[in-house]
Amino acid sequence: STIIAISHRLATIEKADIVYMLENGQIVEQGTHKELVAVRGRYFRMFESQLTPLEDNLEQ
Image (cartoon, rainbow, N blue to C red; front, side, top):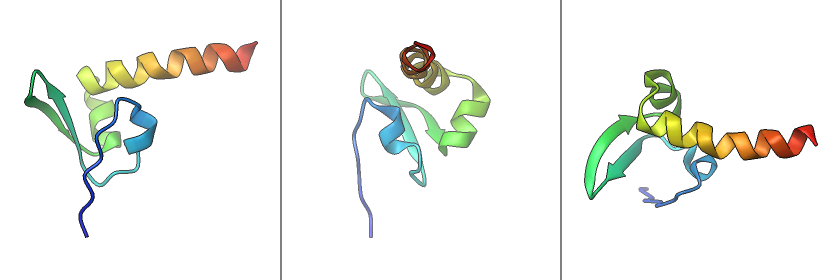
């Protein structure tokens, strides 16, 4: 079966078979979470920005 999930919280889609990163209604990146992180593009920057506050909270 196919499930389409739309999320701004990237942890929600981290285990998806394929991720499409959209910008202004256009697909700008696609791949698995691991592939997109390795490319260090838009997806990586968004994922990293969401991790930083979590890491800060863990250190406190």
